[in-house]
Each structure stands twice: as structure tokens, then as C-alpha cells.
Amino acid sequence: MHIVIIGAGLGGLCLAQGLKRRGVSFDVYERDAAPDSRPQGFRIKIDRTGQEALEACLPPALSTLFREACAIPVNGVNLIGPGLEPVSERWVASWQRAGGDDAPVGRMEDLNADRLAMRRVLLDGIEAQVHFGRAFVDYERSGGVLRARFADGSAAACDVLVAADGVNSAVRALRLPEVAPLDTGSTCIYGKTLFSADNASRIAPLFQSKTSVVFGERLAVIVDPMRFGSRQSPPQVDDYLYWAMIGSSERLNPARDGDAHANALSLCADWHPGFRALFELAKPSDVAMLPVRTMTAPPRWQTDGVTVLGDAIHVMSPAGGLGANTALRDAATLAQRLGEAAANRTPVLAAVAAYEAAMRDYAGEAIRQSDDGAELLFGAVAA
Ligand SMILES: Cc1cc2nc3c(=O)[nH]c(=O)nc-3n(C[C@H](O)[C@H](O)[C@H](O)COP(=O)(O)OP(=O)(O)OC[C@H]3O[C@@H](n4cnc5c(N)ncnc54)[C@H](O)[C@@H]3O)c2cc1C
Image (cartoon, rainbow, N blue to C red; front, side, top):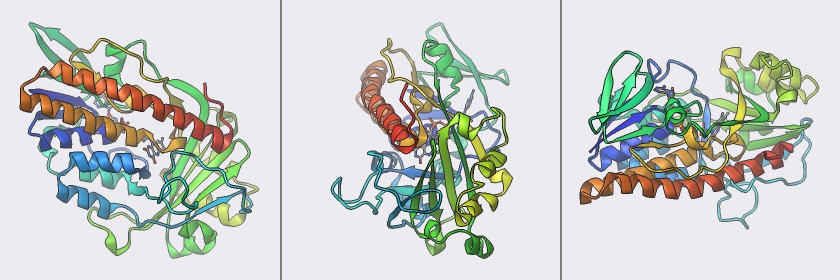
């Protein structure tokens, strides 16, 4: 059995690690020239679901390396307004609390990973099977053989082709043309601000010790301190404050093609100076902007040798912090099913069908929770 994975994002690489662990042959093809050839985003919150999926796919030494590469956990959450005044409790159900739902607000059990560091951990030990600079263009079946084809004219035969190529998936566009992401009418501006001594003296101290959720007019801002300290394993990452503004596109990107950093600065003009400093001190190259897109719950389709995983099939608002965690769960579920089929010599299509049935259920629920999160954070109404 040979599996071809399109896309070396978090989902595709986690699947590759899971297949390696189960002795299933695979190759990953990635359009980017190198792991760091474009900004990958900064902080990513990995919840219990994501952590369990990583543990199921990574060898134990890499699981440990991943945990050590995460930021030092912080205790406590500030729920505040743009003037730094406390606001009454608002809580998004998918943000886990240590000790269960009745535990007091303030202790998060999630891990905060730096995306690039996480991707490097996920690449560890499979470098030879991950082919950068290979953009997928289409696939064909001829003489009973399934083949993916690439922009450089090359092709790769496989038993299963996995679309892990993100929200604009070229594989999905061919395999499931009726499925497409929807614009939610929201935008996300996100970035990082380095923790230099000078910056730290201007940024309000409350942002530096706890997670903060700031509720503004038709927008919310999440701020997370990312300190790696002496617990940090290679690769090295400088300490930073991660921040993400999410809200209506009219508010965050009124000119439609505006500049991400300039938009953030104009939004914060009358906010508390210790909050404003977070955006003023960010390097423009460390700020990015994206329209927020979502899908409806994955529909049913006839299983064949081409399947879909992660944002390619269930992109959702980042307001719930569930997109990557769901992609990791896909990877673990599919790796397990394919591993069992290889070990027991059972039909591979039955394994793919079992993965797809499970994924439809939990991904539909994650999309619903993300819509609820967006509504609670900044009043977005789910489509
Ligand atoms: C601001 C922001 C914050 C977020 N925070 C969180 C969070 O805290 N927790 C969480 O769980 N989720 C979060 N998410 C969501 C998360 O980023 C995504 O759900 C996750 O990255 C999806 O992983 P993926 O592997 O499916 O796709 P991607 O990470 O998008 O990877 C797809 C890969 O496919 C490659 N590719 C694309 N086209 C081709 C092609 N034709 N040929 C070859 N390769 C191709 C791309 O270059 C890319 O490397 C956030 C999203 C945003 C925007």
C-alpha cells in the first residue's frame, strides 16, 4: 500500500508521521519551496484532541520534543475591554478549562505551540519522504492505477491520494467540486510583537502574564504571551506576544485590500496606550490578514481512492481554536484506519470510508462550535 499526501501543513505531516509509525509507505508533496519559505502564522493552540492525535502519530521522543518546544503555560485569563476594564465573563465552550467545565476560569490545559517550530518537529525523521517545491495540479486513473500529477510534469502512483492542501485545495476542487469554502463576512488580523525589554516596558503588564481576551465593538482580540525560556528545545524561537484581532470585515478591513498593519493601527487609535503598544511595536512583516472562511458540515460522497483532510474539507472560523486540532484528529484517525488495513490485509477503501464517516461527525460539530465561538466573541451570526 502506498499513500500520497498533498500538502505538508500540520494535518499532512501528522498523517505522514502516523503512517511511518505504522509501517505504511507514503510520500508528501508540498508546493512551497521550503518549510520556512513563507510566514506560517505564529501561535497555535493545541487542545486535548490535538495532543492525543499527536501522541498517536509521533514516536514518543518526538512527542516529548513537541511538548518541550511549546511556550511555558500561563495561568489565568483576562476578560477585558479596549480600555483594559474588566468585562463580565464570556466564554467560548471549546476553550478547555483544566479540571472540567466547573473549574474556575483561568487555567487552560491547552498547549501554545509556535507554528514553525511545530512544523519542524513534524518533519523530523521523514525529511526524505517530504518533497518541497512540488505543486499538485491534477490526478488521473488509467489502467487501474491512480496517479497524482505535479506542475513540474512529474507524477506519483498511489493506492490512496490524500488532499491535505488546505482551504484552497486543488485536490478537493477536482474530487468534490460541489464543496467550497464560504466567506463569513469576518476578517482576522494577526501578528506577533517581540518580548524585548524595551517593548515590555511599553506594553501593559497584564498582557505579559496571562492569556487576554479583549471584547471591542464588533471585534475581539486574543493575546497570548509566548515565552520559551530554558525549557526550549531546538529549534530556537524568540519570546513574543501573539495577538489576533477577529471581527467584521467592514470594521477590520474597510478598504477591502487594506494593509494588515495599517488596519490594526487605525483600529487601536483610541484604545489604552498599553494595549495600543502591542500593535505599534509589531514589525509590519510580522502582521498578516486573512478573510475568515468556513464550510458547512462535510456532505456524504461515494468513497474512492481520493480523500480529504483538514482545512481542505472543513475550514472553520479560528474563533474556536479548533481547525488544526480537527486536522490532527483527521490525521490520527486516517493513519489508524490505513495502518489496520495494511496490517490485516483488509480492503483499503473500507478503511477510507470508516475515516470519512467518523470525520463527518466530529468535523460538523467542530464547525458548529467555531460558529458559536465567533458569535460569542464578536457577535458574528453563523451563516
Ligand atoms: C489566525 C489563525 C489562527 C488560528 N489558530 C488556531 C489555533 O489556535 N488552533 C487551531 O486548532 N487552529 C487554528 N487555526 C486554524 C489552523 O490554522 C488550520 O485549521 C490548520 O492550519 C489546517 O491545517 P491543514 O494541514 O489542513 O492545512 P494547512 O496548514 O493550510 O496546510 C496546507 C498545505 O498544503 C500546501 N498546498 C496547498 N496547495 C498545494 C498544492 N497544489 N500542491 C502541494 N501543496 C499544496 C500549502 O502550501 C500548505 O503547506 C487558526 C487559523 C488562523 C487563520
